[in-house]
Image (cartoon, rainbow, N blue to C red):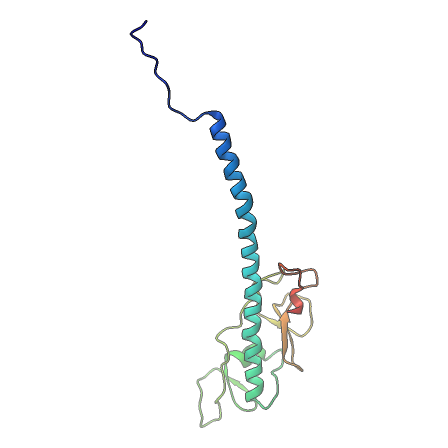
Length: 161
């Protein structure tokens, strides 16, 4: 029996494997909440960016059209098509001979990136319903069409942005 040499097996012990699993669990517990906060922050920033785009477009429209704002029904066309000084919209290109010299102010109406109406790029005059944005034609103000219960990562209501 002396000729049979004892061979030691090279492998991880159960204790070593448990320690590795615990360390991976701790790292995951730290990383996952940070990643989900990043996703929430990205959506919040997208709302703010889309509002800035829409508000700037409405302000530019108002400046070029004698301080008037487009109606709720005409807002998508007013922002994405050409118009004359009266605010009448045209799908064709600018034409100085006919007075169609303004716009378009945005290529497309951005969709709401958060909440129950996520993905909607339509407008309404009052909060509620299945529209993406709320628009007040008398003041030119635009805000997300989200109920009071929908808040961002800081607890701020989206409809107060």
